[in-house]
Image (tube, rainbow, N blue to C red; front, top):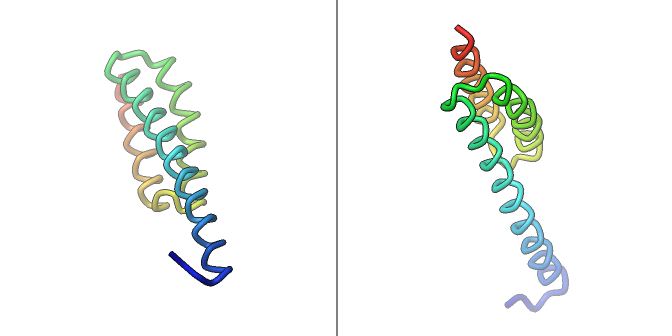
Length: 88
């Protein structure tokens, strides 16, 4: 356990941030799962709606360094390709 006041504060901050990051990652994964489920079901309308939400979450996660920015970009691109393949 830290003895220095600033180190104790850092531990408290880290604990809060860890919980928030876990929550945000869980929300992101759930949304990505909703998009993939809609794609597998072949429902273009629902997939588009869920994709818009997922895009917003991915962009925000990339900015906050929750996930790497390139990973967010890759996921968006791959999902968009799959959704466009439903229509054709």
